[in-house]
Amino acid sequence: MSRAPRVQREIREFLDIGPVQVAELDLPDGDAGAGGDAYAGGGAYAGGDADTGRDAGGEVTLRPGPGSPPVTHGEVFLLVRRGGRPVGTLLGRVPEGADPRTALAALARERVGRERVGRRPESNTPAPRVPPATTVVIATRERADRLAHALDSLLAQDHPDFEIVVVDNAPTTDTTRDLVERKYGERVRHVTEPVPGLAVAHNRGIAAAHGEVIAFTDDDVVADPRWLTELTAPFAADPGIGCVTGLILPARLRTPAQVLLESHGGFAKGFTARTYDPYDPPLDEPLFPFTAGRFGSGANMAYRADVLREVGGFDPATGAGTPARGGDDLYGFVRVLAQGHRLHYTPLALVWHHHRETWRDLENQAYGYGAGLTAYLTALLVNRPALLPAFLARLPRGLAHARTLTAGREAGAGTEARAGVEGGARAGVRAGEDTREDARARSAPGGHGERTYAWPRRLSRLQRRGMLYGPVGYLRARRALGGPLRRSPDGPSTSPGGAR
Image 1 (cartoon, rainbow, N blue to C red):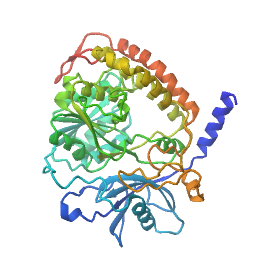
Image 2: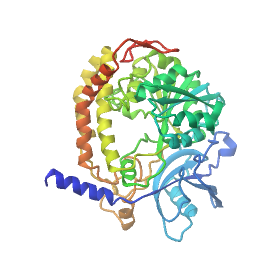
Image 3: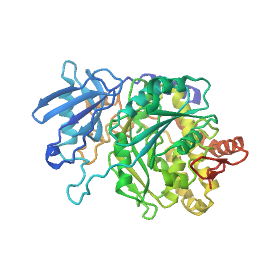
Image 4: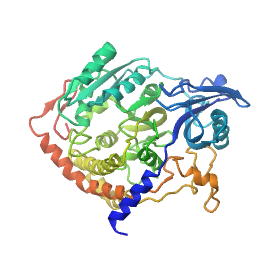
């Protein structure tokens, strides 16, 4: 089949993907009252009215995703909590006429089981520490409506000591400034960065930050009420941690593009906490630390402020809004690790992300991800030449990984479990045991990375093209940023590459 008809077929199949409801269900934790260790948050901000009730297992709360209507019959992408703590996701189907809370609670209990999934050990656990004073930086450009939802969720955080800085990046109107001043007053600080680019905007936020920790998120997320507390608590517990990342789940799955992206994992990194130590490289990560996409994403990350300033912040020639198209967050992760600091991932720090909505969005995203990947690698080698021997040693495996990363990926539902739960029951059926219910389940995402749908080859080709372009884009961005060195008010003098 020639390329044009194949792309047309892929687009037709893409348009056949139906919407999926997003919800969260909180199962009671039988030990929550006794251990004093239960997650006290729970509930997505602005998620609508909760459906609560009591059954044989205790009180259960069902809540729609942020901005979604109440759950009804049909397919549901479900975040499962236990005692408020996120423990996994699964795909459920509510039969017509059934009570959604009862049906989904039964499914969650079957798949998650009654294990104390994701709980902290009761023995040898230090007393909780007060999270450090934090600055939340959110960069935006002419998206006041979405920014307002994000800011509302940030102001609802239970963190005891934080400030919010909005960086208005290369604005063409006063819309963002007017929103912040009119609706949020002194609760949110507004600063302007005239040079376009996400990394440049983040560096402006670093210069304006007063906190011991600087957290970053995007204007298209809704933060869980305990997001900031959970994201910053590891810094208080471990002085060797330089960066913490958290869990990102879809706020909505209304369009084919959103469902397809989440079917192939979205932005989630699972429900198992993990610490990456440059002095003790993980045995299951032979490309460490260069596969930085495994560590997290820029919509949910935090850094110890002095560590981030020590490495010169983010490379302004990377990131959305520059010819490099992305890679600023990946650059930050590896720079911190290369400086000898640990990076920690926690699934307890949750934000809900509004995925892109159209086929064209996915095309741009695929190309941009490819470009950002190789752009950040180029930035690392330019700014930290000492990493070159380690990079060359991993290059053969890296090329093989790149081929796998950009290969056309077929649908895989029915062969893997559909409950992405740490330590929970595996709920999938084996090949050859497919049922009518399993076939219906392929119409929506299940566990992260399950590949409910085939990934279109068109998108894989665009990602490969982006990877070829990335180094060129990075060098173009550096040239565009040429000129005298710029000194930030609170940080070191930096070149366009971010090196001190």
